Image (tube, rainbow, N blue to C red):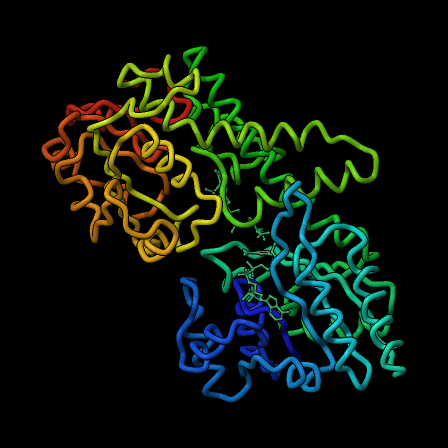
Length: 454
Ligand code: NAD
Ligand code: UGA
């Protein structure tokens, strides 16, 4: 089938590449000229395992192309995806300007029937707004053409995006049009061979399904972080508690890892956006507000542990953090919001670094993929040293802090850490180690919800 995708970010590019890989004829369109120029030369703008290979293979086979021409994209396809960003507005609700702009563009350029597939994460009611925008634009042109707007939320995870897209758990299609449903079933038939993963429902339920999924996952994480904070106070170990509750299949082991908070481009914005949508419909969601508050506090957790260790927490708790850690240098392992990505949007490492800087400390940072991104965000500053290896980061630092659970951090040379850092202490925001193992090497160890592990 001929398919076009507006938005060549994480979702658009991965979706386009995977649809091309099963044989569809795909054009990916974006307004970012530099991104499209790069893609035409085989430069993949994001780090995502397996993506480069799928893109290059399908470009060379001729079934994946890139363009900045909206006209080319609209004329090419009967099925047109919207996969542009929906960032938070000032009040936390989803900013729909990019989605609506694509809707209008389609209305301006379409010459025949189109299925407009909304893959961006959008508040309930957006498909109706896109339908109105397209119809109004057609009316302004004085042109008659049929179209359907379908909701088809995306559930892929960064770092595993290609695998998630190739083998989805479910394919949610929100539409009341049997004609559009049949077209969407044909699009996804290659991904739906072994058992039926397609779930068809009304548009509004489909739109809410996406938010409900992300908010449920974020709630599990904030709940576990809350339990970790309780565990610390009552002298329990959250890692034992995690195993104890995860073994109940009704709870399960997934997404109950405590840590220094969830980040990324989706959980923080989607929890806020659903809370705002509920308010707009006259309902205050106490759970969603609490999930967000717990997470904001949890992102501050490592800074709190550091301040407590250095005896400056009383000052910090009053909000008086200026220069309280002056002269200290912290090695920081892990900058991305999670492993296997270079994405630092809403990463916990950023909250930590920014507080350490306010406190007058220097950060020596290392991440296997996010060094360029760190440089892009923070530029050159005297209190940030970007290191090429994790070993270089600990060299002449006072202490080690871990924000992201990259595989390569799991079995470090503890003796080398002890020799290189002046104060033998690790602050671990992802519970990577057994406290006894770290202590055996003469290092103090602070983790999340594991009690006093000095
Ligand atoms: P992104 O910021 O990586 O990419 C969006 C792209 O859209 C950019 O390249 C931008 O230049 C382009 N764009 C903006 N306006 C355009 C226009 N008028 N025409 C063509 N291109 C345009 O965003 P993303 O991470 O891919 O997210 C897209 C949507 O998917 C969001 O709603 C997000 O919540 C949702 N989502 C993201 C993920 C994820 O893991 N990143 C997963 C599931 C759902
Ligand atoms: C998340 C969802 O998992 C995807 O299904 C969804 O499609 C996507 O958001 C989206 O809508 O964009 P993603 O943000 O890529 O995917 O990453 P996750 O693996 O969900 O991790 C999010 C954050 O939660 C990370 O900071 C991670 O460290 C944290 N996390 C995750 C925990 O703190 N504990 C856990 O047990 C799991």
